[in-house]
Image (cartoon, rainbow, N blue to C red; front, side, top):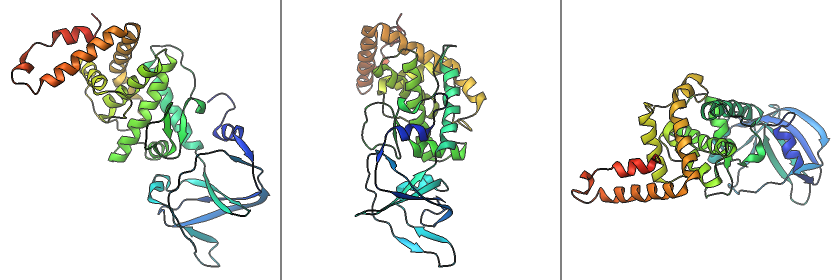
Length: 307
């Protein structure tokens, strides 16, 4: 983010006037169907709210945990389980249709994302100057989009998952890492001069080499090329003990820089990219034909590397 810029300030810039809202703070319990405990009540009104896309997730119920307990219980949809333990503001809005809104505090998660951005920038950047992480560079959403989006989609649920655990173990954590890496790498590639289509393909290739999970931005050809280049760089794909491990990104550096150089070469000479892609698809289709796969693949290798 730019100096002095924060998630709150970016959100405030998009705000519009609405009916008065009463604020309090709460934390999501370890169980998503558990109580939300209010830690502070502020009897003041807010004149602003953020313009955001709405996503209907179902109907929950509010239950009392007891008149003397000082807490309530709100059942939330399973899709929000990634935010278990997340601190929230609870906004109660008056009017014809009163609303109870949870506003998660993502400051810690965004700080962790900035750290990952710096590590990736140093790994890919060839000592070139890469700007700081800015929210405006991405299409931010609470949950990963179900359909393709314009721009670079970045989900807070993925960021929170990585920031909270600090390591990648479960399948959902690996998929979250792949989505975050693909988007950050695409943004870095764009800062280094890659055009949008090549930047997206590069981001997907980086995520695939690191996690062996497809993020959906690139093609099978580009992922296959990235895997081939990583092997030539003597990089053995393995899951990082932590995406914030400096040693792991040092290990990745030769492979990721070689992959970036290949995309930059293709951008400079797109006819070689098209030729390499066509040859790869012909070779892929040839695998199902007896005897065809025994033919030499040298022409493809020469075209891929732009010789």
